[in-house]
Length: 145
Image 1 (cartoon, helix red, strand yellow):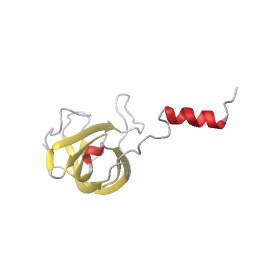
Image 2 (cartoon, rainbow, N blue to C red):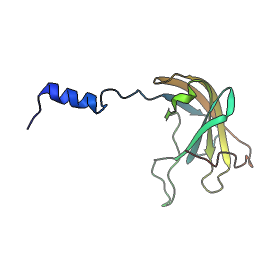
Image 3 (cartoon, rainbow, N blue to C red):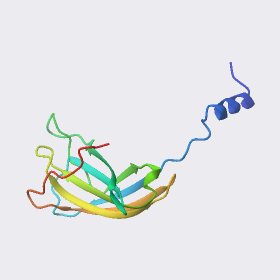
Image 4 (spheres, one colour):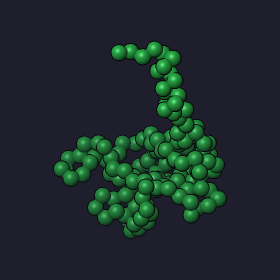
């Protein structure tokens, strides 16, 4: 049975289906210079420029097929990385992306950029990863979102 358009639209409005907010996001173009080793894990941190304690982070592994059963292939750069952020991050932010070693979890590459997040809109940023000297540390956030 097909409902009349007026009934269908009324149901959609009452269910809130037509009133969803647009997501707040930042599209980051990530480049890597020639010094960067293969990266299997990327850690992304977004922090408010005026309040570095206000930060959100995430970690993701590459979805490229690898030659070992337990690990993926490396990311391929340049890479488009869409990030969804909370509206609370509206305004100037610092975006840091780190390459993380699969086995030791040491940071092997890092890049940062500033961006302006606009609530319920898409923003853009770009950054270039550069290699971090051996022993770059395990820095990061234990509270990965």
